[in-house]
Amino acid sequence: MGLLAADVHDLGKANAASGMAVHDDCKLKFLDLKAKRTCRFIVYKIEEEQNQVVVEKVGEPTESYEDFTASLPANECRYAVYDFDFVTEENCQKSRIIFIAWSPDTSTVRSKMIYASSKDSFRRELDGIQIELQATDPTEMGLDVIRSRAGGP
Image (cartoon, rainbow, N blue to C red):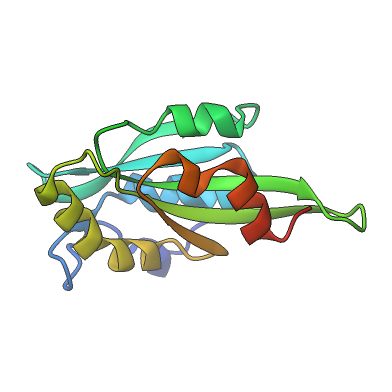
């Protein structure tokens, strides 16, 4: 599934709500995750100097949920997307794309404010998110929480 010219027209423009631009790579990597499944997760970072959201890390398809959570910094906010595969109680293979707003209590107030004010507009750039979580510590996005939100056993 390729990108149409209309799809990439506004990718690099600043978002009117927060003034935060979204780097083209953010949406392109997300489309890779969603359509091609060439990665397991994506961690996004706000580059304050450039006033834009950029891709910080892309996880290989073989990486685990533990690899994903380990890639989130303990003291800094991030946005992340995880492609969660699971088997239902009816033994059906399913997948859910989860958006996580990571805002640890130990991050700066400024960082929390910037990420909070830009979250909704950035999240709207990623068409196909099925579940959204806000987490301030690892227990709020543990595998049990993810499974229950995704509808898995």
